Length: 383
View 1: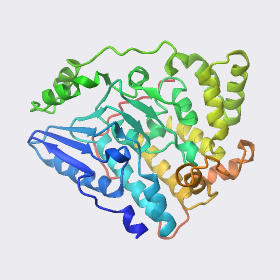
View 2: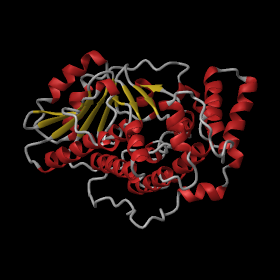
View 3: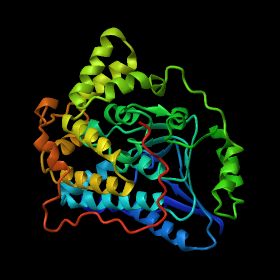
View 4: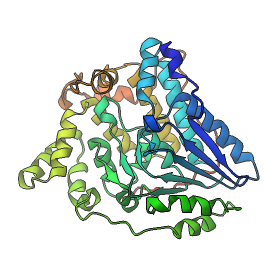
């Protein structure tokens, strides 16, 4: 029963609308913040592939109903499947997510992601590969995976590593939230507009009859709004962030933040310290290494490496931290996970290296991404 729930095909979890030239893919689980299920992912892959080869279709719009674009994958459903059955249920779902993200990243036609609300984890992996990434004053972005014994995945080793300086390390290691205006400023998003104009934009895009990105960009630009970037927002602190998060190890990063806190009792520094001290030590080290290696890799290699790490986490190659994190944060909600190892200094290089090594499982095939010719490197490292 629990396993079947993981693959439930509830109707209308994704809506497919539009006209002959413009197709809309609408995430439709607002009561679950549009968190992705296995079936939703399969549906989107199927329809997107069909749109790509249909000569009448010129543009695809991604959006979500409700107050979220997408808060990530449905982690609790995957957990239920794995506990009731086998860890490979989780990896099969994750591989589908990666295939979807890669499809969007290499899509042969312009993809417009309208991110009007919460976007985290798998939602970021899906939307931030789009040609145009539109945000509003309602948008909130975060990568909070280290709080549940996971790591920054779904392509984040690619897109976080390409942010200016070491801002990506800051976002990945502290779970910090940033708003739409800061997403544009740091390069995660391409356009900012007011939420009240989203419907007008969609109406204008409904008239598109060409795949020409310049034409589409001109339409979007008509609705652009100059964002009000907070003077004390996260990105305005880049100098201090670079000073701290350029350090070689997680221990050194944390120590550097603590030194800053002694002279600057700023809330964001204290928040970063508190997050890192409560997050899973192994997850922090995996995330840092993944982002650092991702800075030197293309998207395909980043996705393959992240998939390998996910497999090790789900099969408990080194520790049970992910399952413990789900228990403490999402199930029992005691918010007191017992991480093992419990301290950063106890996570050895040998333990960390095992997450990045080939999965030693007879029936476990490594992720193989299809050969596609449309990958555009929209984000280059900005160190």
